Length: 123
Image 1 (cartoon, rainbow, N blue to C red):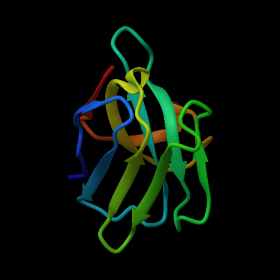
Image 2: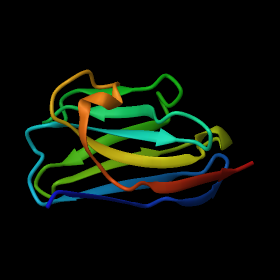
Image 3: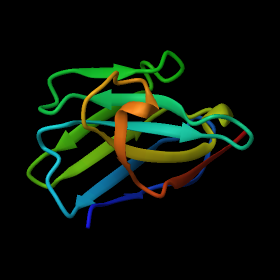
């Protein structure tokens, strides 16, 4: 059974940092791109960042570019998102997902999803 479990969310003040982790089990995803999405209350799930299968290429939404860094450890079947200089508008549930093939910023291209971890940034 494939499972993606996010962790590392929490409450942080504006300007602070958090590091999200995503642990994959049930199969290895080292051959696939992975990504992070987020969903704020009343809004659509939105692309945050993606990384190629070997970490050689990364992609970011304009809203997080320069503040967030995506990385992965294929030996641990894990995905990470380092979030710095957090803003209240970053408040959302953050999801990790596996892209089995498709446009990196399109949620329709992702086949496996975690349950999400809440990130709340206070002003």
